[in-house]
Length: 467
Image (cartoon, rainbow, N blue to C red; front, top):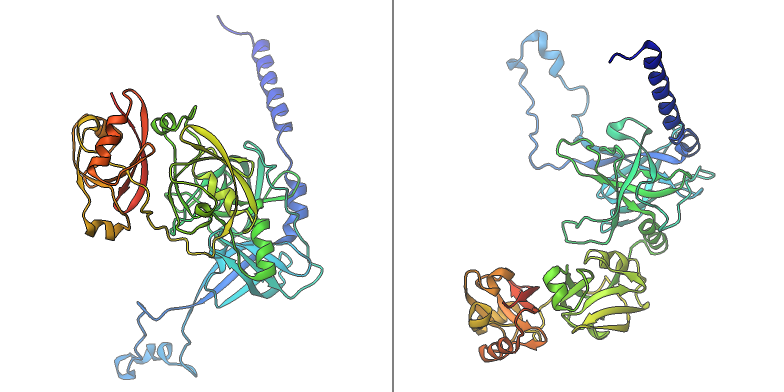
């Protein structure tokens, strides 16, 4: 059946009306750009070129060069100076007297830093402080009555909200891109395994040169600092990450006051809770951060936390996964007394303790008082006593070494490997093969139990379930 021309026109105008309604619902970014662009700056950084890997040009003998080319190779005055390596990034002004926020990786190791404003004024900047863990830096220029940006309120940004970035991607000054918040609280560990920034993930087009620039909400407030992208091509593919304003406020205040940053610190090694572990610890579902190791003499040990505790809440903040804990602990001022809710041996318990500072020695060392073992039979593991050399190497006392994993047995299904050292089964410390055997005999069939092991020197909990 053919449609009449009148019906076709009706459909066309209907679609056009829908498109106009949809377009009318889109945000107008023009006021945000016009009002805030003057406080966004371009940062030009210069580094000394290293001599390694560079060839020095050998002056050519005039006899080797034809007469008509000689003038191109003759030095005019002194020989050329060593070239400088340059890079660029973005930043933004937060005070009228010249404080500027950018990324640590933009200015770290720089010999000179030049800040350029939208009106083409240029200033030499000094570094007030750097913080590699958050990838933030605070600069200052000698100027007054500068335009400034307003920082937003922490915790108000929502997934799906429109956001806008201004920066200088690939040197294209003051480019504007927009998108939405894709996720919050993204955990992106650094090379040093630090994990103190709950990154904002957006689909805003961010490219090299945008680093350090502001991320705005529709109220024109800075909600984040653009820091990094995920890419396979070198350009934006819609996965960009920004440092949230909660971290920015905390770090900037400390850098302005002291020039360095001190973070809250517990002195624990943690891991996620899977389904088997949740069942073995008496949790209704996988959640929380499981403590697998304590720093000897650290704040957590002094506060009464134990290996095997599952942290469910820290100072009122719910801990959904292990990556949530460093985010909230890091923003806590050292010395603050907090309440920590844990699940211990199937029962909820609340502890009060003082948070330490990250300046303390944070290298974990394995405790000697935790042990888990397996000896064959019910657990499907063949074990033997641990030798003195291995105990000394990993800093433990007691435990049993797994020498064989029975295929399809409980240990195999739980992911046990040859060479694992079992130090704890449930609440029973394993100090010998005999202790392991007694603990294995006490286990109930069909019930999951947490087992603490040392694998290549690192502590780890696994959930083991008997048939």
